[in-house]
Image (cartoon, rainbow, N blue to C red; front, side, top):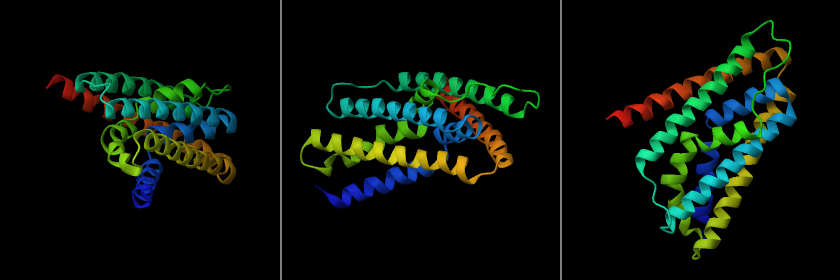
Length: 202
């Protein structure tokens, strides 16, 4: 095994996962409003989305699948719209002083859809992931190793966010964090929709 390449891969995914994005915004907002159970269900959903993206990357590396850039842009627009709807509903619930019952936020399905349409993860698995495939001489062993390392780091980093929000953030700060998280998610969705629509129209 190429240990230096493995360490580089670990560093790359750690930096990617620690950087705020739609998944982190959804996870922290869900943890602040709904607590551990729904937040970890959201983590499982985003992990499942990562497995799908890893599988697509593996199919592209073996030449079994060739993705059309146009289809990626259409998927990007649809994913951004879905993320925008989630963010808008979450923002309305977080800023409504009269909301007695918390609006459903996060969860397995929403985590999966946000994860599968996350521009950071799509770019990583399409462009950077293949650079680490020489981690072992065997393609199958490399893919399994890279997938397992990704899943372990992904779960650990997102679990860290959930535990930090619930254990070390006072209630008032949790509400503020929820609003900020949903606002960030909305801005990311708008930026993603604008970027993909611009490329579709060119």
